[in-house]
Image (tube, rainbow, N blue to C red; front, side):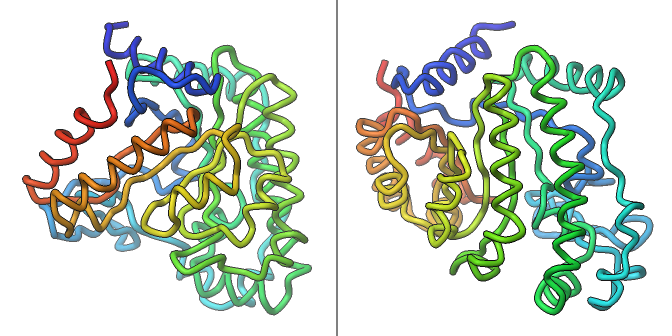
Length: 325
């Protein structure tokens, strides 16, 4: 392990202990994902030029240089909500926690540890898994028109996710396990909070409890503005929370959540992509101020293909304001 990787790991361990390190950790986590072809969007078949969209050989997936793989649902199987509600629930695979799974997870974790602080990430849990499997419109219609039946489908997804989380908890090494589920968009949560309280949050409690029972910490990751249900996420037991700065104000969010929490902050997309160096400077200055009060902070740079002057500004102001050594 080289010194740069060791420094990333040391900074992250200090952060997990709520001890402010010598800089705000930035992109120090190296993610490890089990079966991303099932629980995420998989890997692109090819990388197109910037600004172009490529199509997979089967015509179902789209690839962009900065966005990776784009495809949700199978329009050949799930055209309408009736197709979703008629799915064979027992046919949805639930992982087997055993030697094969644990060996693969150990391999993935060891590989991540060569790049940074190794962090298991489970992406497609409940709502996100439903969008990946069924597509947005069939999923949303099914969840609204027959929530009880759709809740049974979510329960099967949850059982599969719980098995993956249990697997990560059984191998040696993981200290922080990230559980992702996009339940919100920029303007707020996708469903009524009551719907989540009935069909989603009880499963979150089990996910986080599984992590805690193994002596590990959990980070909950969700894009968009989930402030309307922040208290529910906290009550479910998350140790850490993700903040997409394009959707929520980090200061307001952290004040509500409390200084005893971990925070993964994605910097403001609009600043890096279409803002000015001065916009970036002000944002990183504010993060530096927040880091004095919230030691459990970590971050990564948002945005896609910034102008060179903005990318340079981010690097310069990160060094100026967020590196303390």
